[in-house]
Amino acid sequence: MPRVRSSPDIFLVIVTLMLVTVGCLMVYSASSVSAEYRFDDAYFFVKRQLIFVALGFVSMFLMTQIDYWRWRDLSKAALWVCFLLLLIVLIPGVGLVRGGAQSWLGIGAFSIQPSEFMKLAMILFLASYISVNQKFIVTWKKGLIPTLALLFLAFGLIMLQPDLGTGAVMILTSVLMIFIAGARISHFVILGCIGIVGFIGLIASAPYRIQRITSFLNPWEDPLGGGFQIIQSLYAIAPGGLLGLGFGESRQKYFYLPEPQTDFIFAILTEELGFIGGGFVLICFAVLLWRGIRIALYAPDLFGTLFAAGITAMIAFQVMINVSVVIGLMPVTGITLPLMSYGGSSLTIMLTTIGILLNISRHTPA
Image (cartoon, rainbow, N blue to C red; front, side, top):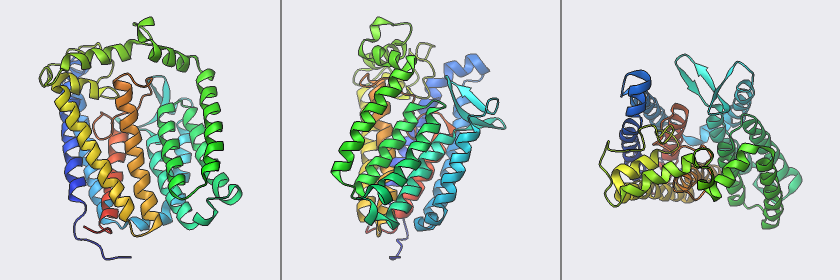
């Protein structure tokens, strides 16, 4: 392996710290009213978030110190463990149901979301498999079919929960990795047509998904039902203006916007900190993605390139989907905002992946 730099990408470290810090502040502000009412403790959610911040930064530091190519040997084991967890979470009475999805496993006072771990495991496996079998990626039999079979098996298990948002991020990220590896455009055209038909079928198979589409197209048709979240999110964003109402001054967190500390934390942020605050966060994410793309481009081997590209793409797709939902450009999907939304599994996994990205950066030019 090439000579390792003494320090990782400093820009990526700084922007990660900034996003997590702003996220913790906004988790407190967005959840304080609900936490005071439900648990008689305005700091309930942010205290738990800080625990996962600490765990996440420990994991990020450890990942920074472990050479990324060592994970290649664990790619198959990690994937099968995640498959097992996805099966366990579907067992009645074992998996925890929240928001209509049976997506969590309880561990003591905390819970984990196996689908979040599967996203990273799939990126790791594809990076490892494709880097060894790249010459076959232009073929169906030895290239695309084996990778797509595993990908859609994982997607199917996630959809049984159901969790379309997480499954969509995993699919988009994986397909982008396959494209970067050199798959044929003609194959993507065929897969794209199949994907469109399948996506329409998934929507048509569940009435609540059809309701989300119709509510997205015209939320005012059902303002107290399917359109409620989108309308309340826009009500949060609109008064923010340039500078916002001020930190802690959100009106929508007073039980208008459901669970504002999770999927809709960006709406509360723009309400309190305005266009300037929202723009600052988006610029931070843009810097993070820029550094991730640079690390992928300068990685010393194909495995590192695909691993870094997959991690960067996963974060990019989550940011785009979450922000698009909040501002009314996409139907509600249940995707959290990376590094900022409340949630232990999501935050810990994100910081872990950033740590891996930082280690890959130590093998690239300064």
